[in-house]
Length: 373
Image (cartoon, rainbow, N blue to C red; front, side, top):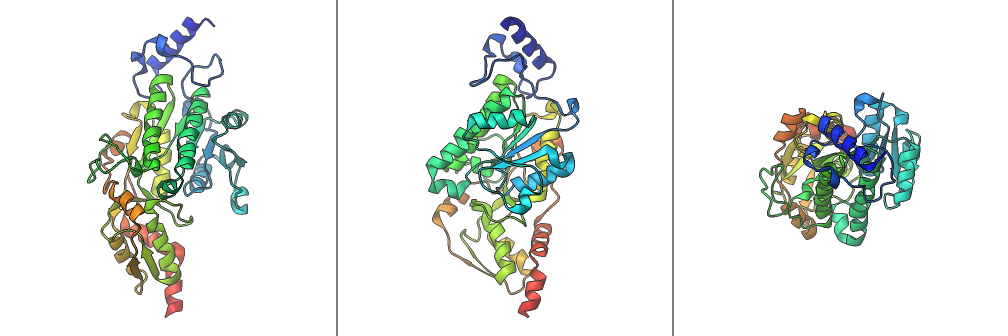
């Protein structure tokens, strides 16, 4: 097909149904060049809509992290076990390996990532591979490679193969000069961690690919995520997850943040539901491509008071980690997620009391307290 005719058809399709809500029709055809590493083809640059197929074929990168396994289980209930592929560079435990499709996939290996997408007919990609905040500060070069170079590979593959791409962002994308209480969707972002810098980079690159190539990019800024069945993963907000583990196990916890450090948090069930809801939202309902979402905000002291209702002898001490505290002090105290609630109907289910009750029931606090007595 002649180049001019192909570009005209692409622009026409974007005018009729813009995949990214970024007003691509304003971009002259001569600027719609090939993707950085795109194989030349006759494919148009629009994502396959959910209505065009029976179900999405899903790949989750970084699947053995805090959120990947839970997301896979959640999506498998919705779309079927065989349609959701978990991937990582680590060997999975037996129960995860046997729970559904699992493959080795290294996001730093661009050629292999393309092969995975093509061979498995992937249509949706959830990109969870990342080094978290505190861990990233101890190995900046690795964090830069995984969080930035890996993202570039994912963006190119997703755009080339017309995938719908979800990349999580974080409260870490904000910095000490951002408004903290509340923090709006659009404001100054000057993070002071490699993790935060990489998340701002991901937001901007994803939105650029949406504008430039029509990539159906979607992103949520997660607060601290609390999950009952996973271990802390090296994030600054993970003190809350560790508190539940230690309270149920021995009734004691040493906190590495100050007692008055307020941060936004969310239970994992709300997080997973929000992720699916934004992925299924019609493109024309999205006024932006990166949204804040939130559920609650609390301090270590407030969380401890709630835990005491379930474990009356619970004791918490403080040994403040200066690195983690500096990170927490640069992050939002509350997220303004009113745009997500307006655009695609986001609504959380878990507040602090429900969160603590759910977590302590999971960890069997009643059994431990009874044995102690």
